View 1: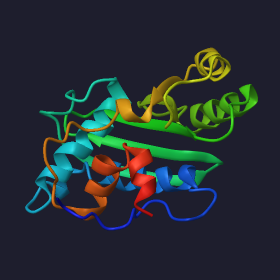
View 2: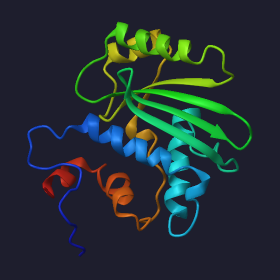
View 3: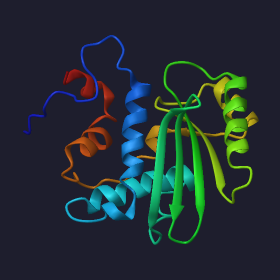
View 4: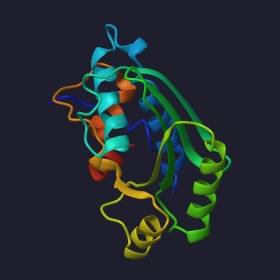
Length: 192
């Protein structure tokens, strides 16, 4: 039996700082979706990162299978928005993802309204598709959070629903640690 190293993404702390960790992992994963990273030894990471991006943008993992991600910029905590992502595709489409990452606290209506207004003003004169997303890592959305998301035009997405369909490790330790092992959180936590 393989002996795994200690869990990379959590330690003995009371709080695993999941929101911050998810912001960094998602930012890095989404940036890996760019076509310039579709070279050995990173082809699998690139393909799986495109699945994550496609799931966030379209709700399905395969919409970017025949489209290249030519440019992807990502900001963490820009205007208090957890992740602000701009994507240019080879088919000429431009997208912006406004992602609120909620792990511990519930949503506040004014919070999502504010973020939507900031992004709408920023892209007022641009031809860009805006995607407003609330992302949770737990098993379900609380009814109140789901209602607030919907009222403000944000899609409520569970983190495990955007996970790529990995059939085997990619060979990239960071990518595999998160996307293959972090999901079984109880046994993952035991590895600390």
